[in-house]
Amino acid sequence: MSDDQAKLDAPEYGPRNCPPGFSDHSFKTDSGVELAVRIWPADPPVDKPAPVVFYTHGGGLFAGNHFVPLPWMQPGFRQRGYHMVSHNFRLGPQASYEMQLQDSMDAVSWCRANLPSILGTDRVDVSQLILCGESGGALLTGLMGHYLSPPPKAVILVYGIVDPAAAWPILAPVPENSGEAPPWVGEFSDAQLEEFLKDRNESNMLMDALWADENKTASEQVLSRRWGTDVRFTRRIRLQAELHQWRSDIAARIGSTVRSVRLGSLHAERFADEAALTAFLLSMSPSPLLETKTWYPPMAFLHGMGDRASPVAQSQAMAKQAPEGDECTGRRKLRA
Image (cartoon, rainbow, N blue to C red; front, side, top):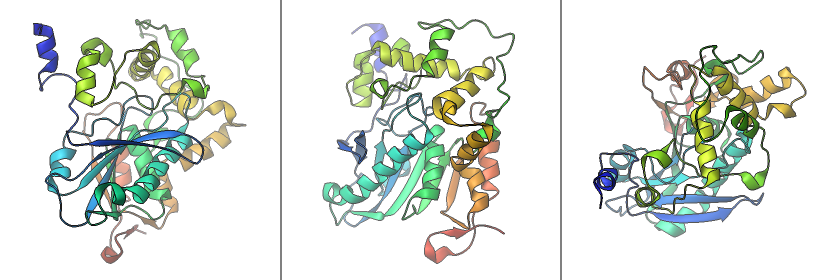
């Protein structure tokens, strides 16, 4: 093994490792979409029905994958008697917000129906479901808190985008990139990436992707071992990774970021006017939706103060509407 390879294999370097002891499952939704679920039973094993933590990965809804949960979830949940589940969903730009939300809700439904037979009816309590989502996955998690029936017992939002219109100037007029923005340097050009945002061909859709530029910092073999799956740096995978890096350069390319949300996530071209787009965006924004609701599950927030991609004001604004009272129902009434 070379020195470089040894460095890549070192546990303190590079992409995080998948906790051992998982099983992989797949299923088809009623609409024919094939989704994947990864399950980690509580470790040490439990001898009574245990709750489930359902993790929705981040990546701006364009990147990321379900192979590895957040590092603190293993000691914070699994080692304390919780089962953990992660799932994938269709990624942008081919998939829009509501498609990704439906995939996530379908995965919850599948887990509620199938976890007892997989983990043991005497070892899992699917009525005790906790949702945990990070970044873009927190958007989907927050929405599931509104739309799932029965609702989850709690919602954990980790540096989440819960009000996209407040995070970035998504609604018209769309800003331009900074005049100081240098030309994009990568395998794909600005023009290719802009054009890719308009791709609606479902045959081009990915369900899992790289998080960033792992194709430049790790080998396929290392990632395959760390993520517990077969990783290949195909052109399609590289294109998705570069699109996410390009759109995430908010400081220099705010226009690209905004267009990626309007075109790649909202599919703005399908709306008759800006008012229709605004109404749809509101229906897909967990924090503003609280203003119209009387009930919502208990919430917990984790967010860094210096986060630029997902401003901490997102969590702060939603936390101000945090519920209180009515402990016995497992749900909380919002402040008047």
